[in-house]
Image (cartoon, rainbow, N blue to C red):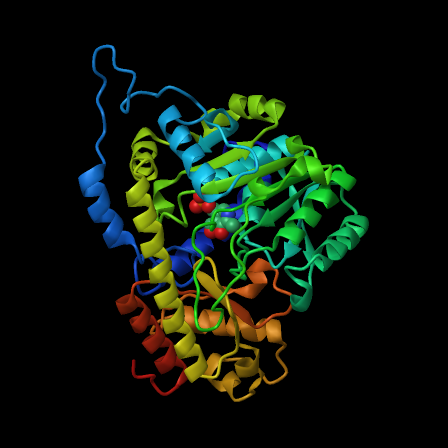
Length: 440
Ligand SMILES: Cc1ncc(COP(=O)(O)O)c(C=O)c1O
């Protein structure tokens, strides 16, 4: 007889299968890093490899030495050197209304593990967080997998996104949710749109949470990946939730929490490091009790710290990253325009939303992709995804439906990929769809 598992394990088996299927698709794609579907930035890998060769070393435990990179370290909240240099980063680049100190920061092994721990501390199992749609699909997994926390998406029409009207849609969703909402999530710069929120909208989010007695979690993992382009020459600059004067808004600082990480701005998804900023001491203390489940490893902490604590090196890196993102964005949008594929311009992050609906509305595509003329747009979206991800094309795009996009037929396209790999991927799509090739 097979040994039985706990109810917890049984109810998560299906989610495990979903992850497995995702892994199969990804490992079948043409490049090991499978850059099209995941928001990874590989533009700066060479730059960082060289930087860390010269600036990173682990310190062994010496007699009377407090630096212990080979030990458990000095704090379960993340080593103090890392938290001190993160506080410097926030004080230097996020324009906080009140200076950030290391003891308000808790680091962990990636942002999703921190989100899992934080979700559990803010929301009871079966209850929900509220977020504007479309939203980053990782929240469904990070919040649902551990504690069955629901993610309630509020549909926001595109023309009202990033305006204070967004809050009217959240209000409606709050009323109609049918589940108790305990927190609101905000991603700024937003994923998948790749845009920053204006100050008045951030303030409206804070007031909304105060009015309804909710926590506000602002995920700012793309904060420094903003860039200009021909599409958006003067984008909305990034404004951190930390920069708001909460007192004057009548908002308690104990309900506002900020998240940041190494994965995106620092081109290092695989190193696994993230951080929570909170001035809620009870929450902080409570999270310490479970921090052991998401510790950031000493080598990663020290590696990140080496760049964060080098003021000039950090500035040079951030500028180089922005320039690389801008160049990669110009390249992909030139390709999209050449093929007449509409898209929503972005000015932050690693991606943009691309509209394949006009293409998928052509019934002639059914012969290529294998759908019937009466197939709906959702089925056509799935057909395109599966056609492109199978041999011989093997290019993975992230379907908008996974991000709860307001209508099917959209895909999120990651452009922060080295030119050589990107051109191979674009050429494969051109061949698979029988398009003429853009000579670049
Ligand atoms: C908005 C947002 N938050 C969190 C994460 C996950 O961060 P990490 O790699 O640190 O777990 C991602 C990754 O795509 C993201 O886009």
